[in-house]
Amino acid sequence: MTLARARRDWLGSVLGFVAFLGGIGLLVLTFQFAYEMFRVPADHALGVAPGKTLQIAEVVASFIGVLVRILLLLVMGLVGSLIANRGILLIGHSRPHHQPPVPGPE
Image 1: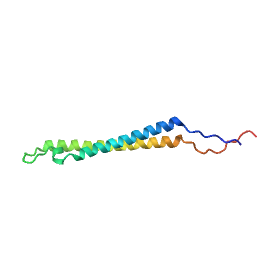
Image 2: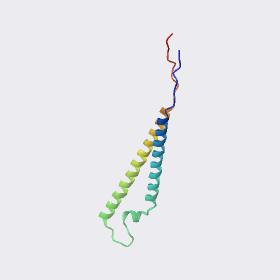
Image 3: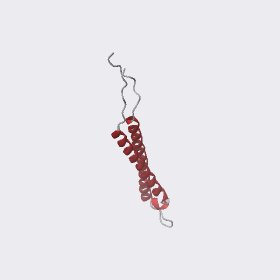
């Protein structure tokens, strides 16, 4: 019996590493956007000023805008983690695996 020789797929490893770094970069960007968004005071984000009459339509529109940004951050975080996960899978599948011996001519 001859043993099948397993080889590492270098292109798969490189692409997996690039995908992993891209996903991590997207996650870092998402956290940076979230940090900047949550540093803004609530009255400024909603357009409410002390001593000014409250315009419900403007506050609701600003609140919906904040909710949309939060949902976009969630989507960015999900996409970044999925991309990083695919990169890890590519790296894992490009590594050689032990294969059972292939029966040869006897």
